[in-house]
Image: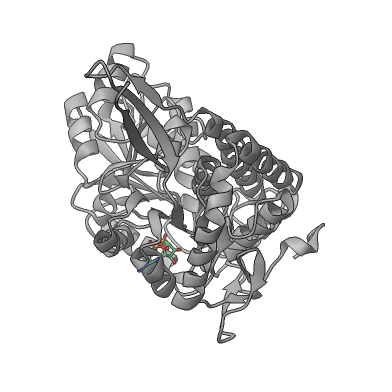
Length: 483
Ligand code: ADP
């Protein structure tokens, strides 16, 4: 890896302000998904090291919460500045371990930084209340206080942003954090820790523990010192973590799977819809929880939309993320490719047509052709399960009611999109979709200023915006008598 600042590449975990190996010296290997080459190792830690990190966080908590929000904001602002200054190195690290095109990685680094900047400021506005009392000799005051030590478990698809949208509000609110990053992408997390240390985040306030998901996750969920767990990943794992947290009644934020519908009505601006579908479907090789998973297209424009989308998709350039001009990198691993192949084979066996793509890319490895399937029906796997790959299945519908019914016919409720030029339809359909996030005439909905999160099996809680910081505070009410 060619970094301007090679010290951003760390192969040790970060606990209590110190760089550390696993107690038994065990390591995990990290590979570049573009060519399978070994990037390096990280410590394979377990419950003991995690406990140490939790205890360090707890010890650091009183001094961190005692700072004014402004003092914490100045430290976080330096962290933000350092992330931005090191954008290029962080992007190269990210592309090397995750595979996304460098342009997308650069974008993610700035997006990740934006959560630190935004929450540093928002921490100053964690207002309480003074409530008119129920008795003349009483006064009622409501304050919001940091919840305490927070655990965070993050996925590989956004190696930096999924961390900062948890660490930003937690630290700004006065909470320390113990983070377990995904084992495929630990280097982005460790580089963030290097910059946090340089920014002046005190020892113990931000810890990164790499290693065994079940051992680290087991300790983070069982340890009573941890008062809050924030997780982004699959619904299956989210359910397990929630059950594991039940005995110690932790507050939870869960950002889980999606099965996003992308509806194109007859009255849509088709060129805009094609651009939106491209951005929403093929970004990060289809590996985002808000990727359009089901494209529902109305009869009148079905063939025209399919042809325009196929034309645009055939222009996408597949290649290693670090290569100039790449629009689509490799999938994260072989299992991901197998799931994509399985979904396509299942759809084709039940009558779907392949408009473009449909197979592994000639580059080999985990590269896959951007694919469009037409004549897809609700009986096919692509209708029910999140594909997490570059496959756009096109469903046909006749009426608005049918589109809404099809869109809501899933246990998930994270993101939905629709394209229409009718303002009354915007309100009708926007209101009827059972989703936490609705993109209307846009395929890009992520920003630090808006609440991101899902309904139903897509989880609970919100990240980003003024709502995101509420996840990291407790409400206290003081009743003052004898006045
Ligand atoms: P994905 O399919 O995106 O990898 P997962 O939910 O399996 O989704 O993983 C997301 C994160 O959760 C990763 O950091 C992974 O290591 C972690 N993880 C997976 N299984 C467990 C578990 N049983 N306990 C704690 N963490 C887990």
